[in-house]
Amino acid sequence: MAGVDLSSAEPGLLAWLAAGFQGDMHYMAAHGSKRARPAELVPGTVSVLTARMDYLPRNTPAEWRANEAQRLRRPQEAVVSVYARGRDYHKLLRQRLQQLATRIATLAGPLGHRVFVDSAPVLEAELATRSGLGWRGKHTLVLSRDAGSLFFLGEIFLDVALPATAPVDAHCGHCEACLRVCPTQAIVAPYRLDARLCIAYLTIEHAGPIPLALRPLMGNRIYGCDDCQLVCPWNKFARRSALPDFDERAGLGHAQLLTLFDWSEAEFLHRTQGSAIRRIGHERWLRNLAVALGNALRVQHSAALGSALQRRCDHPSALVREHVAWALAQAV
Image (cartoon, rainbow, N blue to C red):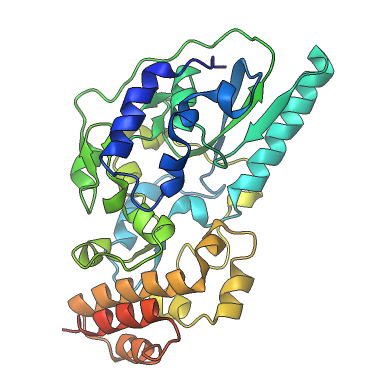
């Protein structure tokens, strides 16, 4: 449980926005300081209940981090961030939080509330750390001693005053593994992320051409990036989900670039139904895959990769055509 006075977090938020680190995420700036003022977002809010939901698939092996690292060294394999291989978490977590709010109302009497899951101007990580769910890691994600960082966050804004939970101490110490491993050096300083360099941002939030200098650094990552989490020592404690919803679907845990690049738009929409991936659309899906195929061509000759790219040379989208042309130019 957290209070609603987040005023001490406002200077950091405004400095981050002033630096332009939000990139194309104009909604971050559009709401300004409201993001740090829960009572302005939902008038009457005096307490915020925060929650987390683990998302590692149920059958994840103990050596999962080493396995994921190996996949990054197989150029023709498509790497999708672990959180996106199962069901879209937004509706699921929102539904469960709504059920929790209903139970609270049953016990405590009528109360005003709003549920949020990554869907409004809310400083989720700030609220989570203030309420004791964990501490802010140097990669800017929330870390827990008993759950690592592989969990989703959600909030219930309440109009009843409840005692705040004590925050926990930070336990990153001198470790800077996440800063060193970032392929694009997007973590420009401890606790400071330039989203414009982040592969998760580039493959999901960014709608236009991917900057030329960053394309070779993306490797075979086609949706999101888990590198900073894979090297974090605390993620040896990451918890498996108790739900089947986050189990891998559509073969996204072991898919090949060629297979995914051949998906038509209809097949893309069918296979990503109920998935977070669907939000980027087929055009950006092909853009991301073209970059990965170009990176694969740079390190190993493959007639099959070249042929697949050639088949998209005349794609209706100028964005796709440009990235396909770049990819073909990478051939060794």
